[in-house]
Length: 498
Picture 1 (tube, one colour):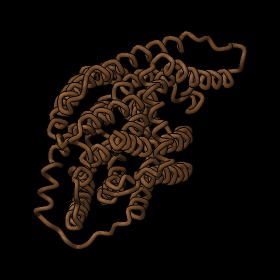
Picture 2: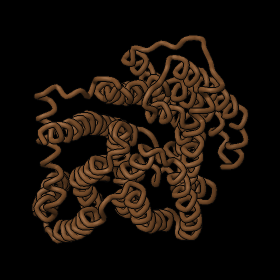
Picture 3: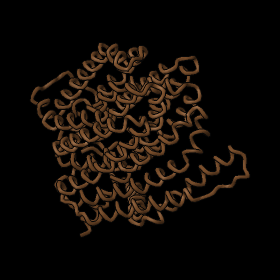
Picture 4: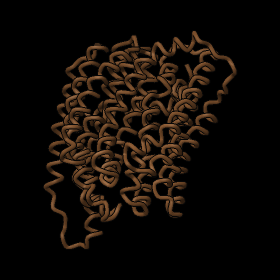
């Protein structure tokens, strides 16, 4: 019994310490990113952000495809040889060069599609981001396999800091949308450099067709799921950019970056940690269930109160931080909070399916989600960016229970605890939002001080109310913090390789 308890503590400790590093670093990353976005929003116009969103589409496709699933295939395998690593590295480099070349050739076509000539030059510059990401695939996979999440966290913070400085310098020099693209390239280069240095691995010259076919056997469904995820995540930007224009797309894009992407950057690392840890115990269903439930509970406790806060305080946050030219983003930001709510735990469910080697089921889920999203976004487009945002809320709310049911059946997870957790959290977030909206802040202060008071006060109230009203999420967070302290005291092997 003692050995089993130690095993469970080690698992939770590894998951908690790894998640703490990844989530903590992503929080730091988003804070740094927010500072630079505020500065850039005051220098640049919404049109500049809209043009970057158009140019980002090819890069988003590359990131979604994830070097054809090679990195995840490396993490999922129990043993990886040097020959396999060499094969994966050179294949990833070739993929990056091919994508970069295609983007260079297709840049004028994308510019013509959107009717924005400047998009072509931005696409060619952003091709470097795709190349750097592919080159870094094996180095990042090595760090994930070794559960060396500290290095990944440091890389994320350094990248956004360096990229932000480059973007601000270029923007102040009159760079416009190119300043934003330059910042993305610098960030990708820094992230690659840190991953190469921290992994301690260097590629050889070998390459094996047999090894590649084995990696592809796992990665093919993941690649398909990645493409469908690209469609799901970018059909809104494509249609808004084509039919509404760059300025509305800029408002929509910045709103999406402000509330949906930051939460994905928190939940995605948690899913990455869970995938790495769960891949080692994929046949031990009880431990898999415990890790899944606790990860979902921690994410809900950490993320959902922040969503309620942003939704209620957006009218004060946007003008204060970004300026009056961005006030049109307020209603879009508030509606997109619903998207963030329902998508906040999706990466964890997907990681469980991957850890069990069921990338095929994830692929089938993404097919349905992509089809549903395309139809919904097209239906919402006549009502502009608000209609598109509302359509994404609807599709996200429909997709979440379908994914949960798939995970429950695949991993033989008990529905009871999971159902109680989600239903309790939904009730708690509804009450929290209603109570926050009912608060009346002092009207005697000047506008700036009144906005600052509302932002700070509603933030504290949102977390206090939600954690009080949702005991399951509060208990999950408390258990994770205890395991984190225990893991740090015992120097749990989160940095030890398999």
